[in-house]
Image (tube, rainbow, N blue to C red; front, side, top):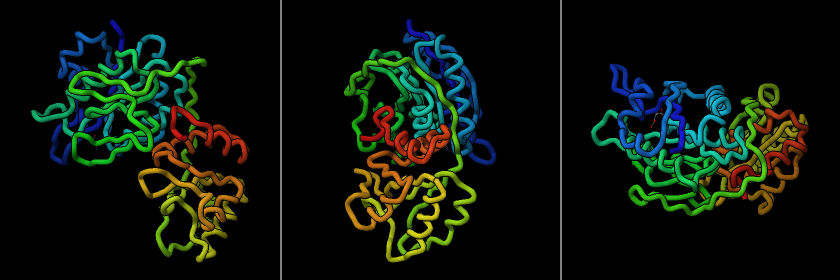
Length: 329
Ligand code: ASP
């Protein structure tokens, strides 16, 4: 029998209704005992790491989860993490950058309704997360939710209430569940390198969502307070050139040695700065990277991870564009 460590961090799955609204309160052994069939699948130990609404999670908790997995990595065959759905895609992407080449699965799951509710999706999700973690098809950091198994670098929460809350963006799912039968699509890769952990993150990044007509009068503030900038543009990407303060501000930012990643507000198919004049104008500045088909969560967490490695502007660009767990094609 495989040995799995269940790490609990809170979320709706572990929440109860209090006077001030839903909040996590259910403990890890209670979660486990709500799905008694798990005992027939594998040996499970539990580790109650946090009990937070994932809205309250930050890079500090991502590092805490990665360090917990590092500590117990050789004692278990895989890890299941219960987590709030709201920021699960950020945590999954962050873990994908901090934990590399893991043949052992690190599986995140949660639910839209508390495990205490009669009509909950929690029991199915938890059971399927364990089914996947115990299967020979499992590897790396993945989210199991409803009937989907999704790479940690490709997952997005796309529905705020429905049970099929997550989708794999710009890449196929790793596997799906037909009822409780796992149907793998993506074969387990062959691992040539040993697993490695690198939990250095620099969270001093700013995400700028472009608006039509926006002016660039904030760049001096950004230059003195942040190390990385993500610009979520329109369509395949670019910066309005009709308003000179934006491109002039970006030029000052770039020449100060900072990194800029262009991504798009459009969910599917990604950005490409090489197409339009407005894209090329920004793309030729030093330290400007095109996120291509990456998810916004992967862009944010990869930028934090790259900046945490203290590289030169040029090396950091190269590191950002190096694919990790199929995050960029
Ligand atoms: N607010 C909750 C959380 O992210 C939502 C959920 O878990 O579904 O912790």
